[in-house]
Length: 331
Image (cartoon, rainbow, N blue to C red; front, side, top):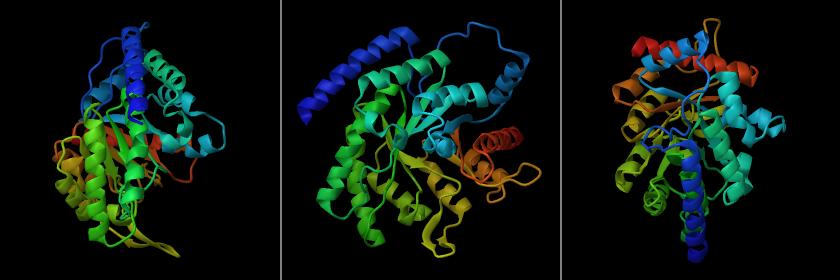
């Protein structure tokens, strides 16, 4: 396995160097992906200029989480390869957050990754992060299962590095008591983050159900891991600790949870499910929650993750407009 990883990293370095020459030098910063494209060939339109001016006025940048289009993707109406172009051309969003489910067998496929990266270079789209699911429980109390989960994530760290992402998003799921799962998660996140550190990639944990949706629990895990490249991805809507027959049976206060997770945040997920006639999110007070984000000094990407009943394209634009409105008021 070590020999294969060395070969992969050697190929990764060669491919990255070639694509860097094609797309221009770039830098890697927490809270933002690599700027991969060069100057625009054509002057921006008045609408594009207005959008640019508005973006500059916000204290954060807007990205698009691929899960916002999960119905379209699962229906095979779009592929992962087409996602960056749709984000840029249809929504005016130049930063994307991938979901590994939609290119699950491509983590080590260098030809696929080269094409995906070249498309984002051509589009001047930033690759921000990859959300990882289905690779095992990092909070498993079984040591063998936990170590397998850690090693399953290595290939995604390498893929994220090649694409120019700043992080992979992981889950801290496991079965056992809060203390047992917490201890297991600390050990696994420490091991995975140590591996990712050598590639300048962050390992960020989302509140994503179970114990991880308890803000104080996840914050405590972060304190125990205590590594600079291990952090959180606070999600505005994922604070259900336990589900019942009629929905969430135990829900953590989302404002308290975001406040507890922001000191460790290397990304923010703007979950939205429904909107009223004024374009406000019906389940989350965006003015209140974005003020918490700002008060922590956060200036990175806020990723749109729409997951409601109106058509996905419409929901994405509603979420974007709401972020722009609230961001302008707070900036």
